Length: 46
Length: 454
Image (cartoon, rainbow over all chains, first blue to last red; front, side, top):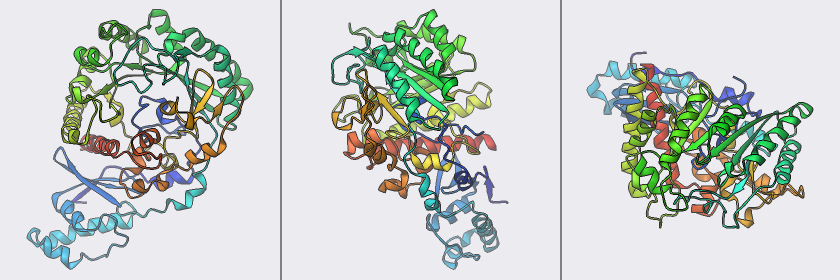
Protein backbone atom coordinates (compact mmCIF):
# COMPACT_ATOMS: atom_id res chain seq x y z
CA UNK A 1 0.00 0.00 0.00
CA UNK A 2 1.21 3.50 -0.79
CA UNK A 3 -0.83 5.51 1.67
CA UNK A 4 -1.23 3.21 4.65
CA UNK A 5 1.25 1.14 6.60
CA UNK A 6 -0.31 -1.38 8.96
CA UNK A 7 1.83 -1.73 12.08
CA UNK A 8 0.21 -4.83 13.53
CA UNK A 9 -2.27 -7.38 12.35
CA UNK A 10 -3.61 -8.23 15.75
CA UNK A 11 -7.20 -9.23 15.83
CA UNK A 12 -8.60 -8.90 19.30
CA UNK A 13 -11.69 -10.79 18.26
CA UNK A 14 -9.65 -13.93 17.71
CA UNK A 15 -8.21 -13.64 21.22
CA UNK A 16 -11.75 -13.55 22.62
CA UNK A 17 -12.66 -16.96 21.21
CA UNK A 18 -10.21 -18.89 23.38
CA UNK A 19 -9.72 -16.16 25.98
CA UNK A 20 -10.89 -15.65 29.51
CA UNK A 21 -8.86 -18.37 31.24
CA UNK A 22 -8.35 -15.97 34.16
CA UNK A 23 -4.78 -17.09 34.89
CA UNK A 24 -3.09 -13.78 34.07
CA UNK A 25 -2.09 -11.23 36.67
CA UNK A 26 -4.65 -8.87 38.19
CA UNK A 27 -3.61 -5.46 36.95
CA UNK A 28 -3.35 -3.82 40.38
CA UNK A 29 -0.87 -6.52 41.43
CA UNK A 30 1.73 -5.06 39.09
CA UNK A 31 2.89 -1.49 39.62
CA UNK A 32 -0.18 0.64 39.58
CA UNK A 33 -2.55 0.47 42.54
CA UNK A 34 -4.08 3.81 41.58
CA UNK A 35 -4.40 4.21 37.82
CA UNK A 36 -5.84 1.22 36.10
CA UNK A 37 -4.34 -0.11 32.91
CA UNK A 38 -5.12 -3.63 31.81
CA UNK A 39 -3.64 -3.77 28.31
CA UNK A 40 -0.07 -3.81 29.57
CA UNK A 41 -0.48 -7.16 31.29
CA UNK A 42 0.94 -10.33 29.78
CA UNK A 43 -1.11 -13.27 28.56
CA UNK A 44 -0.26 -16.46 30.48
CA UNK A 45 -0.73 -18.59 27.39
CA UNK A 46 2.04 -16.95 25.40
CA UNK B 1 -14.98 2.39 15.35
CA UNK B 2 -11.68 4.09 14.67
CA UNK B 3 -9.59 6.61 16.57
CA UNK B 4 -7.22 8.84 14.67
CA UNK B 5 -4.60 11.15 16.15
CA UNK B 6 -1.38 12.91 15.32
CA UNK B 7 1.60 12.56 17.63
CA UNK B 8 5.26 13.40 17.08
CA UNK B 9 4.48 14.17 13.43
CA UNK B 10 2.98 10.73 12.77
CA UNK B 11 -0.60 10.25 11.52
CA UNK B 12 -1.96 7.25 13.41
CA UNK B 13 -5.22 5.35 13.10
CA UNK B 14 -6.38 2.73 15.60
CA UNK B 15 -9.12 0.32 14.58
CA UNK B 16 -10.74 -0.09 17.98
CA UNK B 17 -12.48 -3.46 17.75
CA UNK B 18 -9.67 -5.38 16.04
CA UNK B 19 -6.78 -3.55 17.73
CA UNK B 20 -5.04 -2.94 14.38
CA UNK B 21 -2.83 0.17 14.20
CA UNK B 22 -2.05 1.97 10.95
CA UNK B 23 0.29 4.80 10.03
CA UNK B 24 -1.28 6.82 7.26
CA UNK B 25 -0.36 9.74 5.06
CA UNK B 26 -2.01 13.13 5.33
CA UNK B 27 -4.51 12.39 2.56
CA UNK B 28 -5.84 9.23 4.22
CA UNK B 29 -5.89 10.98 7.58
CA UNK B 30 -7.98 13.76 6.11
CA UNK B 31 -10.20 11.30 4.27
CA UNK B 32 -10.90 9.29 7.41
CA UNK B 33 -11.78 12.44 9.30
CA UNK B 34 -14.50 13.06 6.70
CA UNK B 35 -16.03 9.66 7.44
CA UNK B 36 -18.03 8.91 10.58
CA UNK B 37 -15.55 7.21 12.95
CA UNK B 38 -18.19 4.63 13.86
CA UNK B 39 -19.41 3.94 10.33
CA UNK B 40 -21.13 0.57 9.85
CA UNK B 41 -20.98 0.26 6.08
CA UNK B 42 -18.31 1.49 3.72
CA UNK B 43 -19.07 1.87 0.04
CA UNK B 44 -16.58 0.30 -2.43
CA UNK B 45 -16.52 3.61 -4.28
CA UNK B 46 -15.31 6.87 -2.79
CA UNK B 47 -18.37 8.98 -1.89
CA UNK B 48 -18.63 11.99 -4.16
CA UNK B 49 -18.75 14.44 -1.25
CA UNK B 50 -15.37 13.18 -0.04
CA UNK B 51 -13.87 13.12 -3.52
CA UNK B 52 -15.03 16.69 -3.97
CA UNK B 53 -13.56 17.84 -0.63
CA UNK B 54 -10.19 16.31 -1.48
CA UNK B 55 -10.07 17.09 -5.20
CA UNK B 56 -6.92 19.20 -4.73
CA UNK B 57 -5.02 15.90 -4.27
CA UNK B 58 -6.10 14.76 -7.75
CA UNK B 59 -8.87 12.26 -8.40
CA UNK B 60 -6.59 9.28 -9.19
CA UNK B 61 -4.70 9.74 -5.93
CA UNK B 62 -7.93 10.14 -3.95
CA UNK B 63 -9.41 6.97 -5.45
CA UNK B 64 -6.19 5.07 -4.79
CA UNK B 65 -6.15 6.13 -1.13
CA UNK B 66 -9.83 5.30 -0.73
CA UNK B 67 -9.18 1.89 -2.28
CA UNK B 68 -6.62 1.15 0.43
CA UNK B 69 -9.08 2.14 3.15
CA UNK B 70 -11.71 -0.09 1.57
CA UNK B 71 -9.29 -3.03 1.36
CA UNK B 72 -8.54 -2.78 5.09
CA UNK B 73 -12.26 -2.44 5.82
CA UNK B 74 -12.93 -5.67 3.93
CA UNK B 75 -10.07 -7.37 5.84
CA UNK B 76 -11.60 -6.42 9.20
CA UNK B 77 -8.75 -4.07 10.08
CA UNK B 78 -10.58 -0.78 9.69
CA UNK B 79 -14.11 0.08 10.85
CA UNK B 80 -14.36 -3.49 12.14
CA UNK B 81 -17.61 -4.28 13.89
CA UNK B 82 -18.16 -4.55 17.62
CA UNK B 83 -19.49 -8.08 17.89
CA UNK B 84 -18.27 -8.85 21.39
CA UNK B 85 -21.83 -9.34 22.64
CA UNK B 86 -21.42 -13.03 21.72
CA UNK B 87 -18.93 -13.34 24.59
CA UNK B 88 -21.35 -12.05 27.23
CA UNK B 89 -21.30 -15.46 28.92
CA UNK B 90 -17.65 -14.87 29.78
CA UNK B 91 -18.41 -11.59 31.57
CA UNK B 92 -19.52 -13.32 34.72
CA UNK B 93 -18.28 -13.86 38.25
CA UNK B 94 -14.88 -15.56 38.33
CA UNK B 95 -13.02 -17.30 41.14
CA UNK B 96 -11.08 -15.07 43.51
CA UNK B 97 -7.40 -15.54 42.73
CA UNK B 98 -5.54 -12.43 43.89
CA UNK B 99 -5.29 -10.77 47.29
CA UNK B 100 -3.87 -7.49 48.43
CA UNK B 101 -2.82 -8.43 51.93
CA UNK B 102 -2.64 -5.44 54.28
CA UNK B 103 -0.11 -6.93 56.66
CA UNK B 104 0.51 -3.56 58.27
CA UNK B 105 -1.87 -0.71 58.88
CA UNK B 106 0.99 1.28 60.23
CA UNK B 107 3.60 3.26 58.39
CA UNK B 108 6.93 4.90 59.07
CA UNK B 109 6.34 7.68 56.55
CA UNK B 110 3.73 10.45 56.45
CA UNK B 111 3.16 10.87 52.72
CA UNK B 112 0.89 13.83 52.12
CA UNK B 113 -1.20 12.22 49.37
CA UNK B 114 -1.64 8.86 51.15
CA UNK B 115 -5.05 7.31 50.43
CA UNK B 116 -4.45 5.00 53.39
CA UNK B 117 -4.65 7.74 56.04
CA UNK B 118 -0.93 7.35 56.85
CA UNK B 119 -1.42 3.61 57.20
CA UNK B 120 -4.51 3.21 59.35
CA UNK B 121 -7.19 3.60 56.66
CA UNK B 122 -9.23 5.70 59.08
CA UNK B 123 -8.96 3.15 61.88
CA UNK B 124 -6.43 2.37 64.58
CA UNK B 125 -2.93 1.52 63.46
CA UNK B 126 -2.19 -2.18 63.76
CA UNK B 127 -0.40 -5.01 62.07
CA UNK B 128 -1.91 -8.26 60.80
CA UNK B 129 -1.46 -11.31 63.02
CA UNK B 130 -0.07 -14.53 61.63
CA UNK B 131 -3.43 -16.18 62.30
CA UNK B 132 -5.25 -13.68 60.09
CA UNK B 133 -2.62 -13.87 57.35
CA UNK B 134 -2.80 -17.68 57.25
CA UNK B 135 -6.61 -17.54 57.23
CA UNK B 136 -6.39 -15.19 54.23
CA UNK B 137 -4.20 -17.69 52.38
CA UNK B 138 -6.62 -20.52 53.20
CA UNK B 139 -9.54 -18.38 52.05
CA UNK B 140 -7.78 -17.61 48.76
CA UNK B 141 -6.93 -21.25 48.09
CA UNK B 142 -10.52 -22.31 48.80
CA UNK B 143 -12.09 -19.57 46.71
CA UNK B 144 -9.73 -19.94 43.76
CA UNK B 145 -11.32 -23.21 42.59
CA UNK B 146 -9.66 -24.21 39.29
CA UNK B 147 -7.33 -21.23 39.04
CA UNK B 148 -3.71 -22.31 39.27
CA UNK B 149 -1.87 -18.99 39.53
CA UNK B 150 -2.59 -17.18 42.78
CA UNK B 151 -1.26 -13.71 43.62
CA UNK B 152 -0.63 -12.15 46.98
CA UNK B 153 0.67 -8.59 47.27
CA UNK B 154 2.02 -7.57 50.66
CA UNK B 155 0.76 -4.05 51.11
CA UNK B 156 0.11 -1.52 53.81
CA UNK B 157 0.79 0.88 55.38
CA UNK B 158 4.31 -0.37 55.20
CA UNK B 159 4.46 -4.18 54.92
CA UNK B 160 8.09 -4.43 56.05
CA UNK B 161 6.93 -3.25 59.50
CA UNK B 162 5.51 -6.77 59.80
CA UNK B 163 8.29 -8.67 58.07
CA UNK B 164 8.09 -11.83 60.19
CA UNK B 165 4.44 -12.35 59.33
CA UNK B 166 5.24 -11.63 55.67
CA UNK B 167 7.94 -14.33 55.67
CA UNK B 168 5.80 -16.86 57.52
CA UNK B 169 2.92 -16.23 55.13
CA UNK B 170 5.12 -16.88 52.12
CA UNK B 171 6.31 -20.11 53.70
CA UNK B 172 2.75 -21.13 54.51
CA UNK B 173 1.57 -20.41 50.97
CA UNK B 174 4.43 -22.40 49.47
CA UNK B 175 3.57 -25.34 51.75
CA UNK B 176 0.09 -25.52 50.18
CA UNK B 177 1.14 -25.30 46.53
CA UNK B 178 1.75 -28.96 45.77
CA UNK B 179 -1.22 -30.38 47.65
CA UNK B 180 -3.67 -27.93 46.07
CA UNK B 181 -2.08 -27.62 42.61
CA UNK B 182 -1.42 -23.90 42.99
CA UNK B 183 1.45 -21.55 42.24
CA UNK B 184 1.78 -18.50 44.46
CA UNK B 185 3.19 -15.30 43.07
CA UNK B 186 4.11 -13.01 45.91
CA UNK B 187 4.79 -9.33 45.47
CA UNK B 188 5.60 -6.51 47.86
CA UNK B 189 4.97 -2.78 47.70
CA UNK B 190 7.35 -0.94 50.05
CA UNK B 191 8.55 2.55 50.92
CA UNK B 192 12.03 1.14 51.42
CA UNK B 193 12.78 2.63 54.84
CA UNK B 194 13.31 -0.77 56.50
CA UNK B 195 15.00 -2.38 53.52
CA UNK B 196 18.39 -3.88 54.48
CA UNK B 197 20.66 -6.43 52.86
CA UNK B 198 18.93 -9.40 54.50
CA UNK B 199 15.43 -8.24 53.57
CA UNK B 200 16.61 -7.32 50.08
CA UNK B 201 18.00 -10.82 49.57
CA UNK B 202 14.76 -12.33 50.84
CA UNK B 203 12.52 -10.19 48.62
CA UNK B 204 14.73 -10.82 45.64
CA UNK B 205 14.43 -14.55 46.18
CA UNK B 206 10.74 -14.87 47.03
CA UNK B 207 8.95 -12.03 45.27
CA UNK B 208 7.93 -12.17 41.61
CA UNK B 209 7.74 -8.37 41.63
CA UNK B 210 8.78 -5.67 44.08
CA UNK B 211 7.40 -2.13 43.89
CA UNK B 212 9.72 0.44 45.43
CA UNK B 213 8.10 3.80 46.15
CA UNK B 214 10.14 6.84 45.13
CA UNK B 215 8.71 10.03 43.67
CA UNK B 216 11.70 11.35 41.77
CA UNK B 217 14.20 14.12 42.35
CA UNK B 218 15.22 14.60 45.99
CA UNK B 219 13.28 17.84 46.49
CA UNK B 220 10.16 16.41 44.84
CA UNK B 221 10.28 13.20 46.84
CA UNK B 222 11.08 14.82 50.18
CA UNK B 223 8.32 17.39 49.83
CA UNK B 224 5.64 14.68 49.69
CA UNK B 225 7.20 11.70 51.51
CA UNK B 226 8.57 12.83 54.90
CA UNK B 227 8.98 10.61 57.95
CA UNK B 228 7.07 11.14 61.20
CA UNK B 229 9.56 13.84 62.20
CA UNK B 230 8.94 15.75 58.96
CA UNK B 231 12.29 14.84 57.44
CA UNK B 232 12.44 13.69 53.82
CA UNK B 233 13.13 10.01 53.14
CA UNK B 234 15.05 10.25 49.83
CA UNK B 235 18.55 9.86 51.27
CA UNK B 236 17.46 6.93 53.44
CA UNK B 237 15.97 4.85 50.66
CA UNK B 238 17.79 5.61 47.39
CA UNK B 239 21.02 3.73 48.30
CA UNK B 240 18.88 0.75 49.35
CA UNK B 241 16.94 0.80 46.07
CA UNK B 242 20.19 0.98 44.10
CA UNK B 243 21.45 -2.07 45.93
CA UNK B 244 18.19 -3.92 45.35
CA UNK B 245 18.16 -3.12 41.63
CA UNK B 246 21.77 -4.29 41.37
CA UNK B 247 20.98 -7.73 42.80
CA UNK B 248 17.60 -7.99 41.03
CA UNK B 249 19.05 -8.54 37.56
CA UNK B 250 16.36 -9.32 34.99
CA UNK B 251 13.60 -10.09 37.51
CA UNK B 252 10.66 -7.72 37.81
CA UNK B 253 10.73 -4.65 39.99
CA UNK B 254 9.40 -1.15 39.62
CA UNK B 255 10.58 2.10 41.05
CA UNK B 256 7.22 3.76 41.38
CA UNK B 257 6.44 7.40 41.93
CA UNK B 258 3.44 9.65 42.18
CA UNK B 259 3.41 13.02 40.48
CA UNK B 260 1.33 15.90 41.76
CA UNK B 261 0.67 19.53 40.91
CA UNK B 262 4.16 20.18 42.37
CA UNK B 263 5.96 18.33 39.59
CA UNK B 264 4.04 18.55 36.37
CA UNK B 265 7.52 18.38 34.79
CA UNK B 266 7.60 14.73 35.90
CA UNK B 267 9.59 13.58 32.87
CA UNK B 268 12.57 14.97 34.80
CA UNK B 269 11.74 12.57 37.62
CA UNK B 270 11.54 9.65 35.22
CA UNK B 271 14.95 10.63 33.82
CA UNK B 272 16.26 11.02 37.33
CA UNK B 273 15.34 7.40 37.97
CA UNK B 274 17.14 6.40 34.79
CA UNK B 275 20.21 8.40 35.92
CA UNK B 276 20.15 6.52 39.21
CA UNK B 277 20.37 3.29 37.21
CA UNK B 278 16.75 2.14 37.45
CA UNK B 279 15.28 0.71 34.27
CA UNK B 280 11.78 -0.37 35.39
CA UNK B 281 9.86 2.79 36.13
CA UNK B 282 6.30 3.83 36.90
CA UNK B 283 5.24 7.38 37.68
CA UNK B 284 1.52 7.95 38.12
CA UNK B 285 -0.71 10.96 38.64
CA UNK B 286 -1.94 11.56 42.16
CA UNK B 287 -5.63 10.83 42.56
CA UNK B 288 -6.93 13.07 45.31
CA UNK B 289 -9.69 15.39 46.36
CA UNK B 290 -9.48 18.55 44.27
CA UNK B 291 -9.50 20.72 47.37
CA UNK B 292 -6.00 19.55 48.27
CA UNK B 293 -3.23 21.92 47.17
CA UNK B 294 -1.21 19.27 45.32
CA UNK B 295 -4.20 17.78 43.46
CA UNK B 296 -4.35 17.56 39.70
CA UNK B 297 -7.27 19.36 38.12
CA UNK B 298 -8.77 19.63 34.66
CA UNK B 299 -6.86 22.86 34.02
CA UNK B 300 -3.59 20.97 34.43
CA UNK B 301 -4.35 18.55 31.59
CA UNK B 302 -2.75 20.53 28.71
CA UNK B 303 0.51 20.81 30.65
CA UNK B 304 0.43 17.11 31.60
CA UNK B 305 -0.30 16.10 28.00
CA UNK B 306 2.69 18.14 26.88
CA UNK B 307 4.81 16.39 29.48
CA UNK B 308 3.69 12.92 28.39
CA UNK B 309 4.58 13.91 24.81
CA UNK B 310 8.03 15.05 26.01
CA UNK B 311 8.54 11.82 27.87
CA UNK B 312 7.49 9.70 24.89
CA UNK B 313 9.99 11.49 22.63
CA UNK B 314 12.77 11.09 25.20
CA UNK B 315 12.00 7.39 25.61
CA UNK B 316 12.02 6.93 21.87
CA UNK B 317 15.41 8.61 21.55
CA UNK B 318 16.84 6.53 24.37
CA UNK B 319 15.47 3.33 22.86
CA UNK B 320 16.99 4.14 19.48
CA UNK B 321 20.29 4.94 21.21
CA UNK B 322 20.27 1.52 22.90
CA UNK B 323 19.65 2.79 26.44
CA UNK B 324 15.88 2.39 26.68
CA UNK B 325 13.89 2.50 29.88
CA UNK B 326 10.65 0.76 30.65
CA UNK B 327 7.82 3.12 31.65
CA UNK B 328 4.89 1.13 33.03
CA UNK B 329 2.11 3.20 31.50
CA UNK B 330 3.68 3.25 28.05
CA UNK B 331 4.00 -0.53 27.99
CA UNK B 332 1.91 -1.93 25.19
CA UNK B 333 2.18 -5.09 23.17
CA UNK B 334 0.36 -4.49 19.92
CA UNK B 335 0.75 -8.08 18.77
CA UNK B 336 -0.28 -9.96 21.90
CA UNK B 337 -1.09 -8.65 25.35
CA UNK B 338 -4.12 -9.81 27.27
CA UNK B 339 -7.07 -11.40 25.48
CA UNK B 340 -10.16 -9.36 24.68
CA UNK B 341 -12.11 -11.06 27.46
CA UNK B 342 -9.63 -9.84 30.06
CA UNK B 343 -9.77 -6.37 28.55
CA UNK B 344 -13.56 -6.26 28.65
CA UNK B 345 -13.88 -7.63 32.16
CA UNK B 346 -11.83 -4.84 33.68
CA UNK B 347 -9.35 -4.84 36.53
CA UNK B 348 -11.04 -7.67 38.46
CA UNK B 349 -11.57 -5.62 41.61
CA UNK B 350 -14.13 -7.21 43.95
CA UNK B 351 -14.32 -10.24 41.71
CA UNK B 352 -10.97 -11.88 40.95
CA UNK B 353 -9.09 -9.52 43.24
CA UNK B 354 -9.80 -8.37 46.79
CA UNK B 355 -8.04 -6.79 49.76
CA UNK B 356 -7.82 -8.11 53.33
CA UNK B 357 -7.19 -5.75 56.24
CA UNK B 358 -5.38 -6.60 59.52
CA UNK B 359 -8.68 -7.69 61.12
CA UNK B 360 -9.29 -10.15 58.30
CA UNK B 361 -12.08 -8.07 56.78
CA UNK B 362 -12.42 -8.36 53.00
CA UNK B 363 -12.89 -5.37 50.69
CA UNK B 364 -13.19 -5.17 46.88
CA UNK B 365 -9.70 -3.68 46.61
CA UNK B 366 -7.05 -1.82 48.59
CA UNK B 367 -8.69 1.54 47.89
CA UNK B 368 -12.04 0.48 49.42
CA UNK B 369 -10.45 -0.69 52.67
CA UNK B 370 -11.88 1.05 55.73
CA UNK B 371 -15.21 1.95 54.08
CA UNK B 372 -17.75 -0.14 56.05
CA UNK B 373 -20.39 -0.13 53.31
CA UNK B 374 -17.95 -1.93 51.00
CA UNK B 375 -16.93 -4.69 53.38
CA UNK B 376 -17.46 -8.01 51.60
CA UNK B 377 -16.79 -10.49 54.36
CA UNK B 378 -14.12 -11.90 56.64
CA UNK B 379 -11.39 -14.47 56.17
CA UNK B 380 -11.83 -15.38 59.84
CA UNK B 381 -15.53 -16.24 59.71
CA UNK B 382 -15.47 -17.30 56.06
CA UNK B 383 -18.41 -15.00 55.37
CA UNK B 384 -18.34 -13.63 51.80
CA UNK B 385 -20.91 -11.41 50.11
CA UNK B 386 -21.41 -13.02 46.72
CA UNK B 387 -23.97 -10.39 45.73
CA UNK B 388 -21.32 -7.70 46.04
CA UNK B 389 -18.91 -9.93 44.15
CA UNK B 390 -21.44 -10.30 41.34
CA UNK B 391 -21.95 -6.54 41.27
CA UNK B 392 -18.24 -6.05 40.64
CA UNK B 393 -18.17 -8.90 38.12
CA UNK B 394 -20.76 -6.95 36.15
CA UNK B 395 -18.66 -3.78 36.17
CA UNK B 396 -17.45 -4.54 32.66
CA UNK B 397 -16.78 -2.11 29.84
CA UNK B 398 -20.20 -2.78 28.37
CA UNK B 399 -21.99 -1.92 31.60
CA UNK B 400 -20.27 1.46 31.89
CA UNK B 401 -22.13 3.99 29.80
CA UNK B 402 -19.13 6.21 29.02
CA UNK B 403 -16.88 3.26 28.19
CA UNK B 404 -19.10 1.57 25.60
CA UNK B 405 -18.38 4.22 23.01
CA UNK B 406 -14.82 5.06 24.08
CA UNK B 407 -11.93 4.19 21.77
CA UNK B 408 -9.69 3.28 24.73
CA UNK B 409 -11.99 0.63 26.21
CA UNK B 410 -9.77 -2.31 25.26
CA UNK B 411 -6.76 -0.74 26.98
CA UNK B 412 -7.90 0.77 30.27
CA UNK B 413 -10.78 -1.73 30.50
CA UNK B 414 -13.16 0.64 32.21
CA UNK B 415 -10.80 2.32 34.64
CA UNK B 416 -10.65 2.13 38.40
CA UNK B 417 -13.86 1.31 40.27
CA UNK B 418 -12.53 2.87 43.47
CA UNK B 419 -11.76 6.16 41.75
CA UNK B 420 -15.14 6.07 40.02
CA UNK B 421 -16.88 5.67 43.36
CA UNK B 422 -14.71 8.18 45.23
CA UNK B 423 -15.10 10.97 42.71
CA UNK B 424 -18.31 10.15 40.81
CA UNK B 425 -20.29 8.27 43.48
CA UNK B 426 -20.76 5.12 41.37
CA UNK B 427 -18.38 2.33 40.40
CA UNK B 428 -19.91 2.42 36.90
CA UNK B 429 -19.41 6.16 36.33
CA UNK B 430 -16.05 7.02 34.82
CA UNK B 431 -13.71 9.45 36.57
CA UNK B 432 -13.16 11.73 33.59
CA UNK B 433 -9.85 13.19 34.66
CA UNK B 434 -8.36 9.69 34.93
CA UNK B 435 -9.88 8.83 31.52
CA UNK B 436 -8.24 11.82 29.84
CA UNK B 437 -4.85 10.95 31.30
CA UNK B 438 -5.18 7.32 30.33
CA UNK B 439 -6.12 8.17 26.75
CA UNK B 440 -3.14 10.48 26.41
CA UNK B 441 -0.77 7.82 27.75
CA UNK B 442 -2.18 5.31 25.28
CA UNK B 443 -1.67 7.66 22.36
CA UNK B 444 1.94 8.14 23.43
CA UNK B 445 2.46 4.40 23.84
CA UNK B 446 1.03 3.70 20.38
CA UNK B 447 3.15 6.49 18.87
CA UNK B 448 6.31 4.94 20.32
CA UNK B 449 5.39 1.59 18.77
CA UNK B 450 4.70 3.10 15.37
CA UNK B 451 7.89 5.18 15.42
CA UNK B 452 9.98 2.13 16.30
CA UNK B 453 8.42 0.14 13.49
CA UNK B 454 9.44 2.62 10.81
